[in-house]
Image 1 (cartoon, helix red, strand yellow):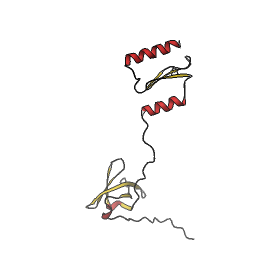
Image 2 (cartoon, rainbow, N blue to C red):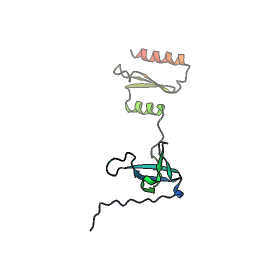
Image 3 (tube, rainbow, N blue to C red):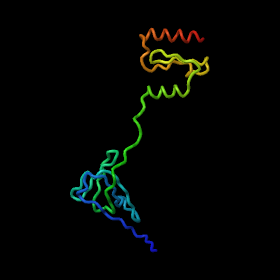
Image 4 (cartoon, rainbow, N blue to C red):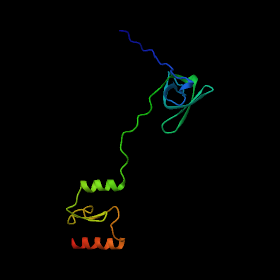
Length: 151
């Protein structure tokens, strides 16, 4: 078996790849000692007059002189993120309320009156998410009376 340390980079891009997602390696601009390379991945937006324009995922546009190219190829589209939609505040509040329930609770429309004999502030508070089903002043009076009964 034979091993080699020689680079086997190849440029597999043409102007017909404009519009495709590509990965290119080029000589770095600082030009210090030894060969230094930098990679760019993005959509090949244009290739005119010896200059490639690649648009990265973050929208940044990178201009690359084709004379600095060492290797390049078309790559598959970026994989789609597989996560659900972001939870709303109402959903998160409901999840946390169910995960850490109070000793006693009572619904008031979309609100939840919570009490735990004064043990924690969270457990002795109103989860005021949604419509209480009453005018605000009336709902606040019900809340005050409910907590008043519990000291």
